[in-house]
Amino acid sequence: MLDKTVDTLAAAVADVQDGAVILIGGFGASGVPTDLVCALLAQGARDLTIVNNNAGNGERGLSQLVRAGRVRKMICSFARSSDRKKPNAAAFAEAYHAGKIELECVPQGTMAERMRAAGAGLGPFFTPTAYGTPLAQGKETRVIDGVGYVLEAPLKGDFAFVKARTADRWGNLVYRYAGRNFAPVMCMAATTTVAQVDSIVELGGIPPEHVMTPGIFVKRVVKVEGNHGL
Image (cartoon, helix red, strand yellow):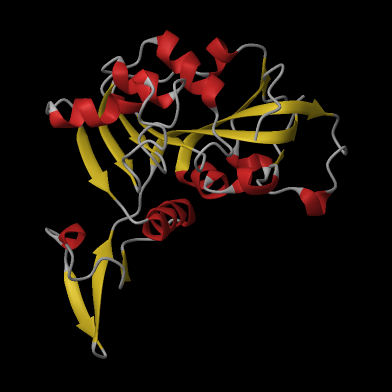
């Protein structure tokens, strides 16, 4: 019987290795799999490359992972926290200015398309975004029909951590509103996708037309009690 559910957060992240590339869903406070990230903190993996919309938002989760010195490189679109007055919110900025962490800043649309390309098995692609800016330095550029383009590479992850509202034991996922954000393309672009969910329903409990990420892209599902945020 195919059953992708696991009983604990610790089991869900147990095989994350040192040096892994981890895609973490979420936009601001919406759709962030904070409990999975906290479980990774307890698990101990280090020298990680994290792909996320930002570099840590709030006190828990990614900010803690950065504060603990476990992230080698951050690939993100927005490298500042919206609440920099809290202690952990400044973790990335402090680590970056101290030379303890690398930063690759990627425009949001480009980041999403790089992951989509990886998930679809495509190669590099040209985009006009960032042409003529410092973000294009070191990359191939080309002018086609008078428009400048930058060549961007697919962005693949060893793991994807996402948050969904509902799942079944086959790993089919339904997100809540804007919680959908980057999660669908991250699930496609990762070798192993782990979903933190509010509830797990019986097979058939999710109408096929409501499935937002098919279970073929999901390796593990873990229910988090009280996981009723955004």
